[in-house]
Length: 231
Image (tube, rainbow, N blue to C red; front, side, top):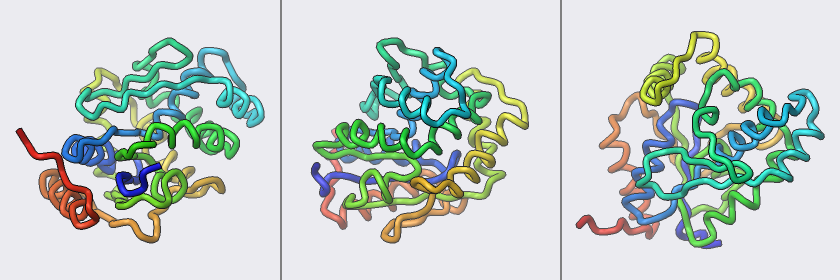
C-alpha cells in the first residue's frame, strides 16, 4: 500500500466528508474510497435475506459472504454500489434503515471482514472517507483530516442531501441517521468515531467549502501530495 498517496477524511454524518473527499480526490488524481459504503452494502444484503439484527454471528457471516463493489471514480458524483451482483442505490442511503446500519457497523467481526476489501481499493493510493479511516483502516496515511460541525448544522445538511436524492425523512428517522448513529459510533468498542492523534481537525460550520478545500489542498501539498494541474 502506498502510504504516501493516501489521504483520510473522517467525521460524523453531515460534517462534509464526501464534499471534501471528492474534491481532494479529483484535484489529486486519486480514487475516492467511501469506506462506509461497505457497511451500507452489507445492510442492503441483510434486508434482502432478512438477517436478524440482534444476531452478531449472523451479521458477521453475512459480511464474510457478501460481495460489495463500490465506485471509486470521484467524478461520477454518486454512491453507486453493487451488492452480490445487484445494484440498489435507493436503499443504500434510506435513513429508515439507520438502526440496522448501526448494528452492522458496530459489530467487530463485520468491521474485520471489510477491512481488507477497503484497503485493497487504496493499494495505489486514495482519498478515503469514513469514520475510522485515519485511526484503523489507514493509520499510516500521509495526511489525515477530521471534520466536525454542530448537530443542528449536520442535520440540515443531511436533510438537504436526502431531498436532493428524492428521499423524504421524518424527524425521528433523521435523528437516528445523524445524532443516534453518531452517538453509537462514538461509544462503540470497535473502531470508535474519534479523531486520529495526528489528524487536522476542521470545523466545517466555521469555514465555507472553497476555503476548506483550499486549506486541505495546501496541507496535502506540504505533505508532498501535488494536485493534478487543471486543464
